[in-house]
Length: 197
Image 1 (spheres, rainbow, N blue to C red):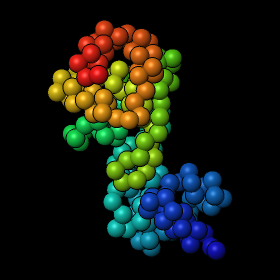
Image 2: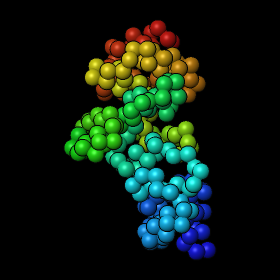
Image 3: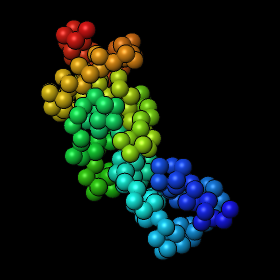
Image 4: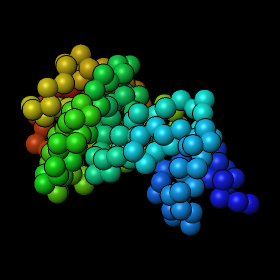
């Protein structure tokens, strides 16, 4: 199998998306990507991200591919975990405290920074509506994040998220309590859980 067929096969096996990193890791040159783009066999979706023609562009996946240290959080994480019906009009990402936010802000990403211990707390993987896996804070971490005073999340979104969480069969209350303690939102969390559980 030649490079062209192998790259197209890679894209097909990855929901129609192939990245420069995937192509290079498979031992092919970047020139193969340019050839495929020039021939119209793949299209450039974002920097380092290419899609097969007629494939729905996954903006959530593309953003994380560009900003690898960004972890989906707050309302975007609620959306990805199906804890809200509201599709975010701007994506929310959390970065380490020393990360330069110039580029993500140019892409209209709502950026939050936090120190190392909190940045690594509760990172999970979730599937986007287009079927790609991205990193987002876990359900429990996200629920604690939206209770923090500086999160400025609409009270209706918070209430709906907790109602949906309360009805989940896989909820993890010990982890939720542990995260609430670490993120200093225990009192606010208790007031929601007393009503719902």
